[in-house]
Every structure is written in structure tokens, then in C-alpha cells.
Length: 322
Image (cartoon, rainbow, N blue to C red; front, top):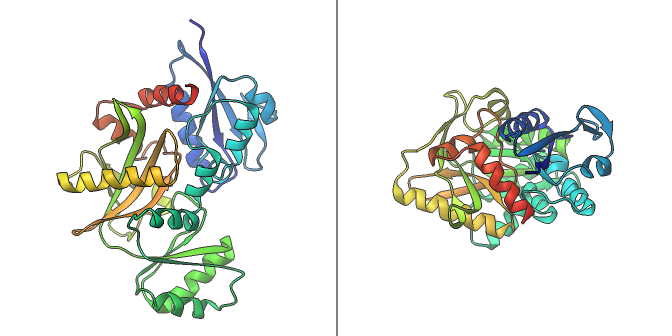
């Protein structure tokens, strides 16, 4: 039987470069050689493409594959750029289409769509460098809508990159200034105290149109108040699956994951981050490309239902090619 040629896109220009390399490596290792010809398509930090270690252009790299698995976390991998390149090349690929990927990566635009769909999220206010306000005036505008603590984050970064916390109103102007200077756009979010949750979703899996994996209770280090970029990079998170959430809580988490996936128009799979409080569950954000690197939440969620990364990738390839 002829092997399917699978291009694995990894690397990229975003802050999640190292995580992308690891997810791509996990994909390459998970595809059995007797069934798949896995091709390592590396994009360096400057955006140049390489196939099996040799410089090339995107059209030449993609002309040699039957289907693509995208391991490019953030940046061009999730803002619609790579998806449009793949569509122009006529290569099937797993994951969100260009518009939905870009929407899910943009925290401000995604919030608007999700809240219009009736999905509960923390209160938030956004600013950009074009606003004719000082960071002090921005801070008082935020304070007029909700009180501290505050989570201050870039609008289009993943993996918790660039996030700061302001415990008081006095700390907020500096945090706003730091994020605005670095990224140009900032989202100030109400800090919700509760249990961190990660939950994966797979389309048309095990007879379910939108199959929701058992949610993971994410344990962060004792000295941290929220999930930080270093936790992803250094494997500082523990994902407890199965969790100790009640059946009612698990159902609420699953319902929220499905609603968010539909509202953003995502395809094939997604992973959502949430906060569970004693009263309800809040959606934080949705990721179009789940991490498969060591320490990520998706692999243990798969294992908890007797599945695996190899089975998930086989299924993703089928979804892409059908």
C-alpha cells in the first residue's frame, strides 16, 4: 500500500517557536513509517522555509506532500497566513480554516464573537497605542468597570506569553505600559479566582459530532497566581486527568467547549482554557492548534479515554483529506 506523504509544519516566527518545534517532533515520532512518509517542513524565525534541512520555498515544499499537519503555534501558523498558503497550493490540511484561525488567535475579536453567542467570559477592556489616553487614564477607565486584581495580556500572543498581573489599581498603569510598548495592543481582564481547566475537542470522533475529551484540572506552581509562559516552556504544569470535578461541572465544561468551537467556526479540533468557580465556569480562550509537546494537556486527555497522539493524528489526517 502506498504511504501517505504528510508534511509537518513546525518552527515559525512567533514567541511559541520552541513549543512548536516540540509539537512537531511529537507528530513526526507518532506517525508510523509503514503507513506515512512524514516530512519535516521547518520554518525558521525569519520565516524562511526548509524541507528536510534544506532551504526551499513554500510551493516546492508543499508540492511533495499529500496532506499537512500544522504544528505552528501562534503567529503565521494561527493568524490565517499559513492556512491561506496551503489553500492556494491546494494541499489538504488539518485544523481551522484561515478566517477562524485568525479569529481565535485575536483575543479581542474572539471575545466579541463569543460573548455575542452568550458565552460567559471575565469582564475585559482593550486599548491600543492609538488611544489618546495615558496609562493612568486607561487604568481608571478599567477600574470604573471592574475592580482588581487584573490580568494584562497581549491581544495576539499564545502560550501565556507577555501576560502580567496587577494586584492593585496602582500597579495597573505600569503593566499596561509594558504590554503596550511590547505588543501595541493590550487586553485587561478581570482576574477570576478558581480552578484552571483545559479541555480538548475533536470532531467526528468515536461516533460523536463534537467529542469533548475529559477535562484536565491544571495545577500551577504554588508560587504562581496564573499560568505563565515559563510554565509551558519548562513543563511546570500538572494536568490531572481524570479530574475531581463533579459530573455537573464536567457537563458544563463540555457544553462550553462545544459552544465556543461552534461560535468561532473552528474545524477538526480545538482546546479551550477555562476557570471553574464554585458557581459557574468561565471561558478564557480557545486554541485552534492544541499543543502535543511533553507537558501539554492534550496528550493526557487522549490517554484518559484509551486513545493516543498517534490515533488522534490518524483521525486528523482523515478529517483533512475527506
